[in-house]
Length: 106
Image (cartoon, rainbow, N blue to C red; front, side, top):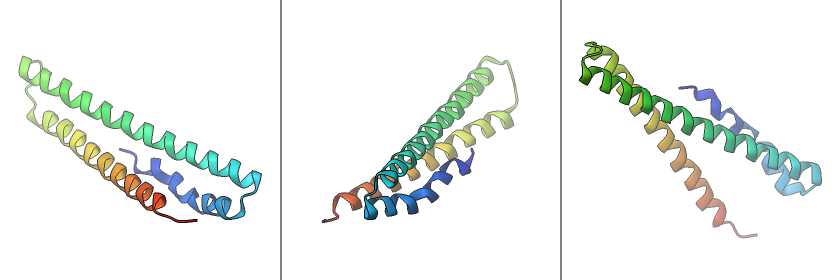
């Protein structure tokens, strides 16, 4: 799993400046930052799904006797589990940030 896919979070400084300044270029930059963050989140979900699919395939191969490597099965299942835990943690952080933003009073 590529942890650097969340590197777009560093662009939040420009997002803050866009909200404060309210200029058109700052708003355009804010939209691009949001789009980049949203695309990173989608990529993370797709990657998690890929690991889950690989784990399911490894389990099927092991159950059908195609492979007898319990190590490969355990590795695939662990990758899927860690990827899912990371995705859920990021989702929870985003939801907490959203709730905090909704409580702001302008």
